[in-house]
Length: 228
Image (cartoon, rainbow, N blue to C red; front, side, top):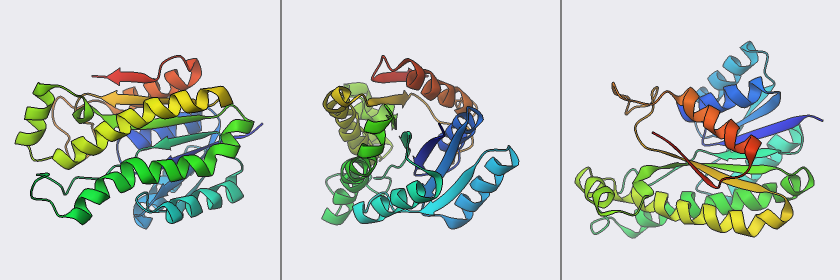
């Protein structure tokens, strides 16, 4: 039976590596995002590897948009077996106290409302094939004085707040959906990722992260995994 992975928030780095990994394992790949040029290039690269792939425009911060993108992916590639959520927001919120209300709402539009809308849209597919939801998250969402101090100093408080909300949401969804045979797991990345705008000499190879996603998807025995 054919399998499809829908990658929401497709871009360079982790989501590209995940597309390559799951595609190599026999999945068709639906790339969902807002950048048409990036999506087209991603599809072209996957097809060059012999992987079935297609692109779908969708805004992860708008429930109606992301639901529509997933429906289009299902129509073209078949039922969704895995949804991998790489979308994030809050990069424009450096200081929570000076941010306007629209920017603050935007943090949760992606991390909570968009993710929940996408989950609802794929739910029937996942229930019918013991599917999975795999969620990308960063260590900025970790609750510790050291993390809080670092995030505040580099003016990424919005990103951290969204990551923390997403971290909690992962645990809640994992408990809520396990009775339906749906696995929910996340990979917490402690560091920057090669191929992204924040790349540096100590950045993590995204193929390592993709392998971790494949590992937890196969084993389905841990909700939170880490890559450092």
